[in-house]
Length: 61
Image (cartoon, rainbow, N blue to C red; front, side, top):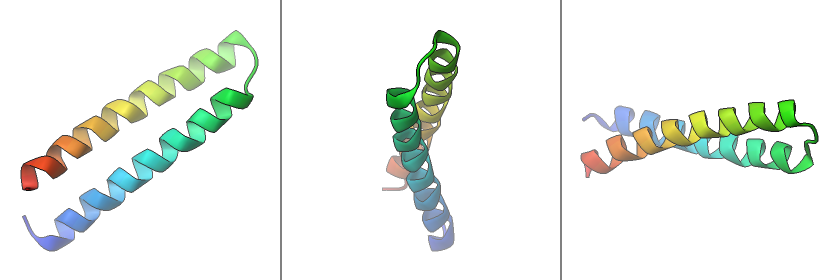
């Protein structure tokens, strides 16, 4: 895989990690079941995306 593809993958991993950190902060400050459920769903989606990206990155060696 070309180096720029690796850099792109690393950037996407960093973005996903940042999104998770931001959502975690929002969840800590949130009140109300609807907001918490929405944030939990978004966190789950971001974690799944991060897991997928990390698997791809690991496959690159």
